Image (cartoon, rainbow, N blue to C red; front, top):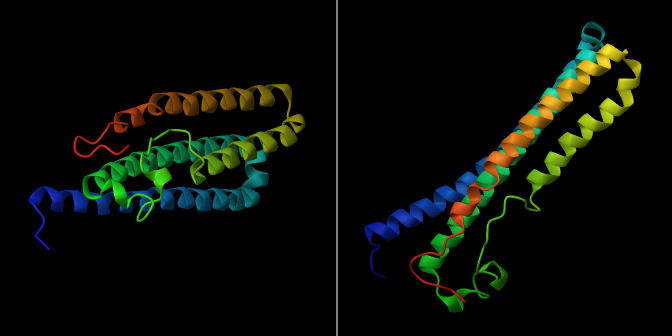
Length: 183
């Protein structure tokens, strides 16, 4: 077998780095989830000191942060999967698809909204915040409800702004590799 050219060596190292980045992005979501669970454990002890309003405010903040980490992890996953797909196009022959790589993965088209774990976790963080607020808000005074409601709106705007800002970044990765074109 002929030795690899500097370009091929670079692409192979890049391929390995992309797979490592996919793993790192996945690990980040689970670390945030573990921290989220730890926050609830801590809040159970701090409840008498911070009250229901403080509890809900912290849940809103940490849920929003969890949603943003999920959006970010999803973005990095899609970015790296798109790059992996393009690097594979450089090395694999058309006949390799459906033998080495399933045919359906021949043309990976990144999309910000996927069925990967990030969106499941995103919905979990959102559902936790919504359910806890629905259950606990009636126990607060009008002014406390207003304050918690304002925090919900602020965190919702931050998460939405993050989503809108970064959802189209993957469009840059929807390019055809200049080398082989697979049909």
